[in-house]
Length: 413
Image 1: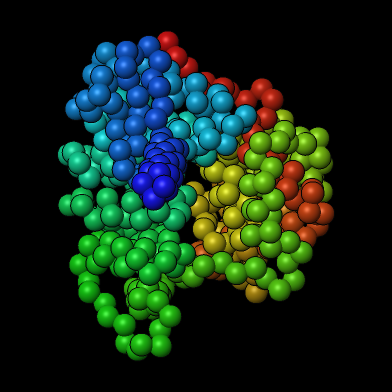
Image 2 (image 1 turned 30 degrees about the vertical axis):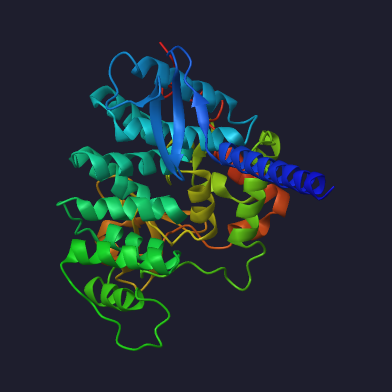
């Protein structure tokens, strides 16, 4: 009797161990990504460790992409991109595929990744992270350095850490104020580890080793903010933007709504109406409507991510493009006007003010022209709109208008 009871206990223990082991195996399999690569026999994109993706063929990791694998990898990337609006899981699969491709990329693969970066602003985060892997395990190339630096405008979280780490490995440094400022801004949005990575990149680029003056400073980047203000007094301060007290809608509020609706179709009719209501039409051209005095927004969705478009709308002076500077003109009669300058003839200056009005000024009457590190676009334009109108305005601008060139698109061949 005792023997039978012991046997029963043993059976139960073995069964429990088997069930426990089975659960662990299932969980492990579910946590690791395995993506079949069509048109390649026994080929997968495999997550061999958390965040570590490899191309596995017949059980062995591929050492270098060749002409044989590239068409299949390219076609899989395009297929996943086409599925992106239907399945959230496609985002992670695309990220995994790009990393796996980049770390063993040959020249055609690298060209393709750069093409993706230029053609699809919304995918620049993933492409930049992928190129970070290539730079970490292969040669450091100038074209990749330029992509990584430009991506500082869009990367966040772990991807920002990967990009900043990669940039510290390059011998090349950036001495442009706008990129040093951007590293500070990226770092300010990071956790403690990310802030230290940003500091290391700033040290690498500037050759300086700035130390915090007091323990009360909230971030090791505070001393870099102060240094930047002293070094570049004419540049926009390295401060994260803050919603104005009178703002009807906050940046985070609108960004959250845009992310939730990313799979929905935009209301283009309401977006166009909002473009007019918010007075954007006075300064900007979009498709066939609006003025051409300010930046043409027809292809803004090919230059900027949706998040960047919202940021530039809510905080117009957070980043002022070099090609659209703002000036203050003081006339000999003491009149002061501020806006963007344009050509109006040999004897006149055209000034587009923040209110969207055009002023013609005789050059003989100009006493002083002063560059201003502030956008001529006024703050608070979204206060003229309801929340739904503001959301649809940004979504409207994030889509190419009817008739705009589609030549940027890449397709399988």
